[in-house]
Image (tube, rainbow, N blue to C red):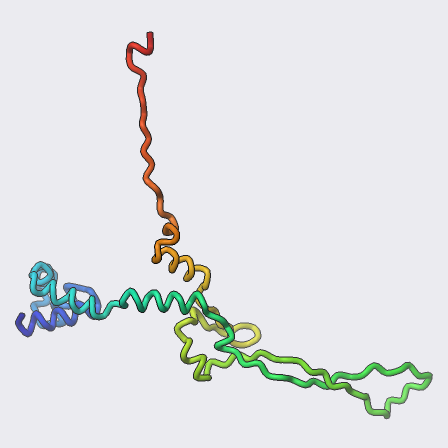
Length: 183
């Protein structure tokens, strides 16, 4: 392959647009579509493109591993639980005299608070499980990839269930009565 063809292969694999790849590789802008068509028909160029795209593609084992991670995803990777103590007013006993000068007594109330924390090492390790992060009414909202969908896809890949929307071929035999049956 010559240098221009190598540039074409690199450009084509970058954006999958033949005419643009021909222009990027330095071929005539006027003949870009025709040149791209000719180059894409060239076996050596086709093989080079296929090799680059195969190298860039996610291997099946990695895809299965990622689906497995999505199926096992939990929000626990992204939250931190911490204790919170809140002082709440104690119930006053009713007295005949209301003394506004007295300090109100309080009772400590313990609870737990879940805080979204995307800065921890654990959270950063599992970023690929996050489908969407958006600002909501009460702060950041995190949506994980659908675990059920990931599990279904895994079962389909393993051949345990048929793919969604897969139809089974049905043979229907239509028998027309012969002329002798009509009599």
